[in-house]
Length: 310
Image (cartoon, rainbow, N blue to C red; front, side, top):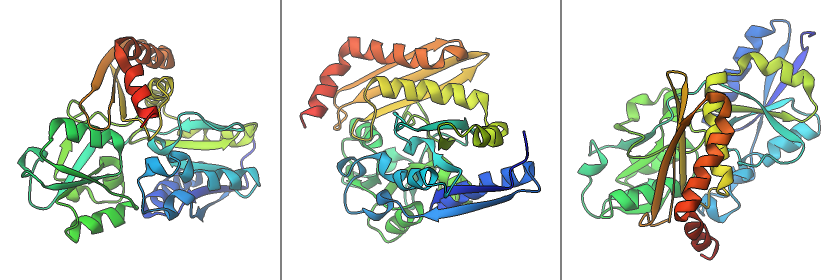
């Protein structure tokens, strides 16, 4: 393979997105010392609409459409995404060509006065942008008030600091990547708050047919993370996964075996189905589909039907 002369990375312009893009830029620059590697920052529709919950404005695809348009137009070679923000069904003409090693995948409590969620008093306001987290919180802590929290990571932290919320729940990975790990009051164990599919992992998207770009980024691919994320995404996809569905999926590799846990819930958390499965890592997507089928057998379709009629 000939070394690339110019690589352009499309990225959202939030501080976290740009950190992620710069991280990939630096890795590619180290691989291809003679190449010019640069980041093309863009504002997406998802970044512009901040007055409504994400589930009400069209979902996760709003964060990647402009980046995909730039790739289609030849203005960029690849895009860097937080995989939890990537729709479960990739649009025609695009593919996830590499999945990078995962940062901490857990949810994090950010709070000034209280050390744990259990310490929060009745009526305390907790902010989250996720129906998944909302369902878990309503189920485990019905005495808390859950309110929508939109905006980039810095905006969310500012709203907490201004006293609009008593606590907020964020992905630990974003805080760690931006050097804000000290803001984490507590990590929420997966048993308490199962992460979103792909949480903590970065995905590199390219246009289908760009074998050159696929070859450039191949060294950044992490096979272990990819097996886990593929299982999680297959589980979510088989349940119609989107930000309108309260759903968690998290896989680990343990002693050569892939362990996948998943749940689907009603938004109020009162109806929740949980399950798990184990198998060979090469069966990642099949394991995800099998777990989804098991939850459907146990009543997940009723939850989905209720969500569709909401």
